[in-house]
Amino acid sequence: MEQILYGAPVAKQLDEISLKIFQEVKSNNKSPHMTAITVGDNPASLLYVSRKKEKAEELGVEFNWIKLDKNTSQEKLKELVETESKNTDGLIIQLPLPDHLSSEDVINCIPPHVDVDGLTSYNLGSLFSNEYKLIPATSLAVLELLNFYQIKTEDKAIVIAGRSRLVSSPLAKILSSKSYNANVTVIHSKTSNQKQFITQADIFISAVGSAKLYDSSYFKQGATIIDIGISSVDGKTYGDIDTQNISEVASYRSPFPGGVGPITVSALFFNLSRLVKTN
Image (cartoon, rainbow, N blue to C red; front, side, top):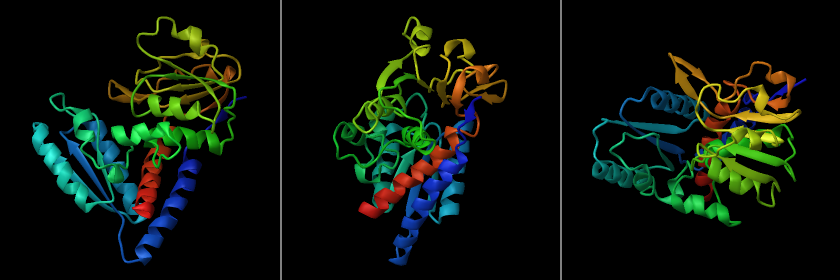
């Protein structure tokens, strides 16, 4: 029988750690502060930032949400990032950005010491050393989920579907490090026979964003399945995993919704607490 890996207790644990640090900061007459920038009116982006705003209020963090027009130029956005970075402990640029903007260019304008998402080239590159300070929030959420439910990774075959800088790249690096000792494979849209890899996975992590892409036939008996993907079809949101009959093969499974999602927001503020504590 499968065990459901709910995110709420993991998020609560992270929040307790963050709150303690924020209270220590406040005792020194400083208020922790986060700035979020959105460009345009992408419904998913606005929803994500509204959740971050709610979490900030819950943890006593000042939250400044800057909403820009979808036609904002690259130059104006970069100038704003430069200015706002001087007045905050953590700054995020909610992705995706409109097509005329370069996400890579804009993100790398964020100074590493306020890059609370951990997505600048500097902070991502630091994951290849033993001195890294931050793990991108979604990747951190997955790691915390595995740790909380004591899912063993050493010498396990882990397959990650998708190759984004937010999830796959950081996870692949960290899970294959000496801290986790996993055997990691990354598959993607150009992988000709994905099932060949997935059926060998002890742990499968999907971050594709395609509704019900993988059904129960893809998984080996006893697999752990973690669903990060999110997509919208006819106004409804879905994960990457088709859960029909999935309980017949999975030992552990994160639900959608209610799995990694709630942890990701808390992981972001956990990152902020580390920045506040060390800066």
